[in-house]
Image (cartoon, rainbow, N blue to C red; front, side, top):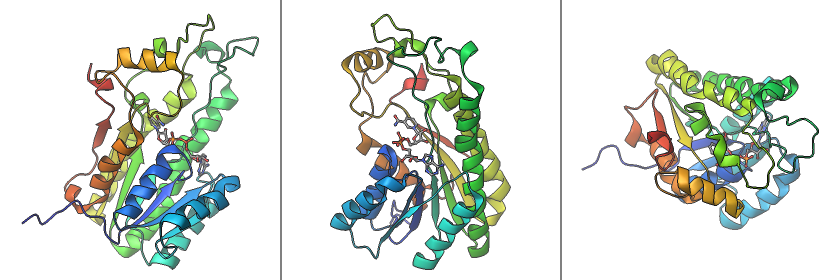
Amino acid sequence: MNNNPVNIQDEVILVTGAFGLIGKQISKAFLQNGAKVVLADINVNALNAIQDEFAELFSTDNFLVTQLDITDEQSAASVVQQTADKFGKLDVLINNAAIDAKFDKDGMSKVNQSRFENYPVDLLRRSVDVNLTGTVIMTQAACKQMLTQGFGNIINVASTYSVVAPNQNLYDFGNGIENFKPIDYIASKSFIPNFTRYIATFYAVNNIRCNAIVPHGVYNNHDQKFLDNFSKMSPMGRMCNREELEGPFIFLASKASSYMTGSVMMVDGGWTAW
Ligand SMILES: NC(=O)c1ccc[n+]([C@@H]2O[C@H](COP(=O)([O-])OP(=O)(O)OC[C@H]3O[C@@H](n4cnc5c(N)ncnc54)[C@H](O)[C@@H]3O)[C@@H](O)[C@H]2O)c1
């Protein structure tokens, strides 16, 4: 008999950035597998649509849709409190919210701002504020609750750009315009793996685990040139289907991963393997 099954039945899972591509996908998967889910996001304009979409699929007893700004300590504390009020505990925090500044694909700006030497420092600060400081603020709020209840599990969403540099050839769209993945995303996401190890070791004695998942290149209406570039550079020759992230998240959220803490799990089709 397996004493540690991949089972998240009745686990309470708080997903930040839950209205976005990955957040929405994994929130549905958690609910389909019997968990209670708090979907929290800064995008208040999408709140009603998300509420309606989820209410069509799941009982409102099992989920909560709410507004959250991870850069705001009061907002983070409030969402943790709402979680405890509705579901009585917080088993898992998924630190998924992040911003990824889009480069100037049409070459509208006079100076190519995505080049490292030109990258605007205010955009760098904005990404650090959300992706780094916001992740810390959200984790602080969750850890207070997890310490009180005596258990917890944190899953940080990293990126391949947390561990390797971007291959800038990926962003050559063959239109004569130079595009580069800018430094802000790389700088702010590089923090995630070591933050994961920091939290894992800090709270190991308190029965709080912390691991990271490293996704890469999830299909989302990319144009053909990008898909072609990606295929050539990826060992598996393709981007990630969003459903392919469900298993890794459910595994880390479940007791099946109970001896895992401080790990950084690659879900990247082998991108970082060569
Ligand atoms: N999509 C990919 O291919 C990919 C690849 C590697 C890593 N990731 C990582 O996965 C995570 C999710 O990415 P995604 O592609 O779903 O992005 P997305 O832009 O679709 O979703 C991100 C969500 O975060 C929310 N958000 C932004 N700032 C916030 C704040 N201050 N407080 C609360 N919510 C905020 C946004 O409103 C948005 O709904 C990110 O951490 C990203 O770095 C994504």
